[in-house]
Image (cartoon, rainbow, N blue to C red; front, side):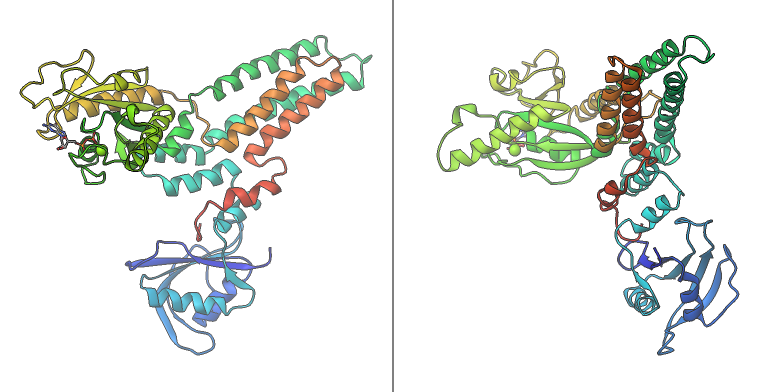
Length: 445
Ligand SMILES: Nc1nc2c(ncn2[C@@H]2O[C@H](COP(=O)(O)OP(=O)(O)O)[C@@H](O)[C@H]2O)c(=O)[nH]1
Ligand SMILES: [Mg+2]
C-alpha cells in the first residue's frame, strides 16, 4: 500500500470551494513540491500559493490542511487542498499531483477502505459512511449516523464476545474433563446460546425496517383506468412526473417518484390501470396488458398500496376491490363530482383536481409508514442484505450447536457462528468481501 492516492472529495461542478484529498506516504512530499515550502504542521491550515513543480505555473491560492497518520481519516498521512472550486483549477492541481512520484487517482471508496484496513473503523461504520452520503431524508441520516457511531458493531461484537467466551469454557471442558473446573459449565453455555438464539432471531425478524429505510418504502398506486392514479401521483409529488390523460391506458409502465414523507424515504409508483379483461390481447392491448402485469407484480411487492377508486362510478371497480389486504389504503377520488355521494366505507375521499382531502390522505399514509417502521424502536436495525446473510448463517450454526451430540461438534458450530458474525464488522477475514463492499462508494470517499 505504498501508493499515494488523490481525488476530488467534493462534488463536481462550479462551486466556491473544492476539496482535493491526498492520502499516503508521499502526501506531504507532494505538498512541499507544490508549495516549495517545508515545515508544515499537522492539523494547522495554511494559506499558500500552489505552483506546478516542473513548469512553475501558478495553480491556485489555496488553504491546505495536512494530517499526520494515524491521526487522520485514512490513518495515513493526508493532505486536504481547499481549492477555488472551478474546473480549470481542479484539473490543474490534479494534473500536478498525478505527476508526483507514486501518486495515482483513488479508486471508488479507496480512502474509506484504507481507513478500514488501518483499523480506523469497522466495516459497518465504513458502510454507514456510504449511507450517510446517500441519505436523502432525516430518518436515513439518523440511521446512518448511529451505525457510523457503532450501533451495529456494538451489537454484533457483543454477540461474538459472548460466544467466544462460551467457546472458551466449552473447550476447557473438552480439554480437561477430569480437572476441578466449576460445575455446570455445559448448562451455562447452553443457556447463553439459547438466549442469543432468541435475540438474534428477533433481530432478523425486524420487518426489514433498516433495509427499507435505506432503500425507500415502496408505495404503489393501483386502480382502474381513469380512476385518477397518475393525477394523484403528480399531486403527491407536486411536480409533473406521470403522464396524465383522459385516454384510458396511458400509463403502460411503472413510473416512480421519490418522496420524503415525515423524514422517511418513499418510492411512490404509478401503474397502468387494471383491466384484466384485456390480458392476452394483441398489439396495443398487449402493451397495456404487460403494463397491467407489472402493476399487479408491483402491487404484490409493495409495502403499502394506495387503491384508487373512481367515486363518480356507480360501483367500485371489482378488480381493485379484489386487491384489498392489510397493506391497502382505500382512496375514493373525484369526490368533486356531483354524483359522487356514494363514498365507500373505509375509503378516504379526495378530489385531485379540486385539491380536496390530500392532506388527510398524506396523514394516513404517514401514519401507516410510522407503524411499518416502528419508529419508536430504539434497538438498531439490520441495514443491509450483507448483514442479514451473515446473521442468518451465524444463527443456523448456533441452532445446530444445540443439537450436537458431542461437545467437540458443539464447539465447531460455535466457531462457525463466530466466524459468520465476525465477518459483519470485518473482525474475521473479509479480504474477499472488500471489493464488493467498496465498489458502491463514490471516488473521493
Ligand atoms: N372530476 C375529476 N376528475 C379527475 C380527478 N382526478 C383525475 N381526474 C381526471 O380523470 C382522468 C384520468 O386521470 P388519470 O390521472 O390519467 O387517471 P389514471 O388512468 O388512473 O392514471 C383525467 O382526465 C383527469 O383529469 C378528480 O379528482 N376529479
Ligand atoms: Mg395513469
